[in-house]
Image 1 (cartoon, one colour):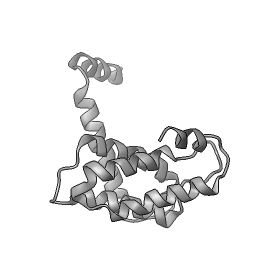
Image 2 (tube, rainbow, N blue to C red; image 1 turned 60 degrees about the vertical axis):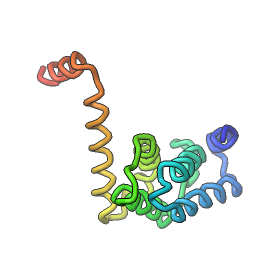
Image 3 (tube, rainbow, N blue to C red; image 1 turned 60 degrees about the horizontal axis):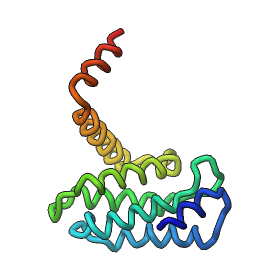
Image 4 (cartoon, rainbow, N blue to C red; image 1 turned 90 degrees about the horizontal axis):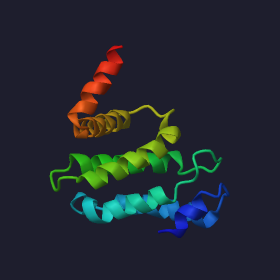
Amino acid sequence: MTIIPAIAKTKVESLRLDRYRNEQADRLSDIKASRANTDGLLCLRRLAASAPDLESDVIFLAQNRAMNVVIVCQDWAVSDDVEINEEVDEAMMLIFVLLVPILQSTPGPHWEFIWDMVEGYLEVWFCSLPKYEVYSSSLESIH
């Protein structure tokens, strides 16, 4: 998994890397919610590692494949089979950052899920700050 990010960041279009990204995205749809914290996490990490540099012209995933990734993540999140752990949430957030530019012109219920994930992630992050930092940042925002 070390070589993939190095190749992906070169800003060069690679058919093998494109195939690898598509295979990882496709594998996600085969992973049941009960395996989201294990196989799903690994697949999300592999997919994120294969992401091109944000400044490059390389397309991360096709729009329909990107939508399928979000749908799989949503299915895992709402499943009663398993409690999604924090590592999977973080991996989803990273993937969403990469998918937002692809999906920005696609309306739909996926946006509500993405925003709920962002909001939940920010709440956890904000609550993890030491109290003096919370008070300090609150005071700064008042000024």
